[in-house]
Amino acid sequence: MAAVKTYLALVCLTQYCLCSTLPENRFLFEKVLIGVERAAKFFSEDYSDLNVDGLYGLRLAEGQIIEAVNECEKKDCEEELVDTLRRLKEIVSTTSFRSLPYLQEADADYYRRFLPVIDKPYLLEYTPHRFHKLDEVKIGTYDDYEEEYGDMCYARLIGSYTEQGRKIPRCNATNDCWHFMTKGNTGRYFITHQLLYFVLAEHLGCPHVFDEFTNQTNPREVLNRMCKNIYVESTKLVENGSVDEMDQDLFLEQTVLCGSLGYEDFQRPDWMRMVLKWQRRDGCFAMPLVAEYLEKESTGRKLLREAAMKDGCLAHKSGLGFSVLATYLRYLVNTL
Image (tube, rainbow, N blue to C red; front, side, top):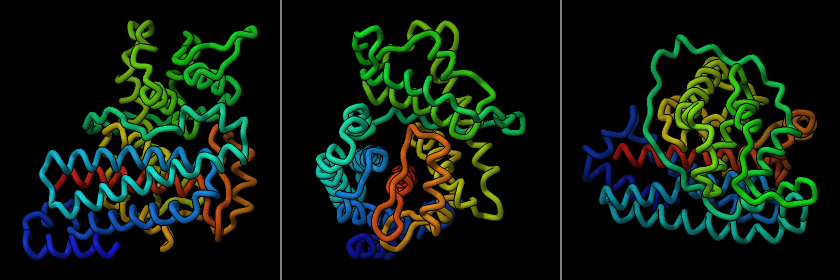
């Protein structure tokens, strides 16, 4: 972390024009970079307490850090910054690898079912996009996610679904799943689960899985619609520069899924500063009443599970928080 501060201090002293190009505040990049480093350090010291869904967040973060390194190398960033990003990439990669045996021991069945989701970083196609005509957006009112059916659609993509005694090969999608995952008027975790379906298809290497449905709707148009609706919903979650603690997990999920695909309206400086305030000094994200939160969370969605780590930290929320900060970092690298 000291190296990060030293690097940025030198840049600001010797290349003032570089710092002045950072969005609104020349210190925002430094703060985000320090936040990413804190999160990486936290997980590197407590990977044995990770759950599968916490590692999902780390893999998202790892992909964003890799892309930040690639972007910096193309832009010919200062050598010290490139070295810092490379070091962060190695830390996250090593932490993710070391956590796998503990995850398998904790819940072998869940681990086996979702291993393809967490076995490598998420390197997603980033297409810069800004929304227009937001006043025309109507937030979806249907948020009763049909978990069992959704799980079946995910399992078909992942390759863990069995039908009539036969295991269905990976990258399988049905017409019913397509309609379920593209239906309109959905909100909250329903629409983020729909979006995650398309993210997973790309991550799993299933580029043509939706070809037979594209005469109905283009997949990118579906993502544009979803993330536009999700963005408006995110703005409603923020009140007076804050988000209710029970909705912070949802806000983070909305941000990382859309932000990592290139929807840059989510990369707002005021939101960056807000999320940084949620992060504890040790790098994790927590809740004051962890037991109460876990009880409420367990009665809602179950596709992504939460678990307590040390000192009240939450595995899934901390993983999401880390990945959101890494998404901010990648975006800010592009502004250098």
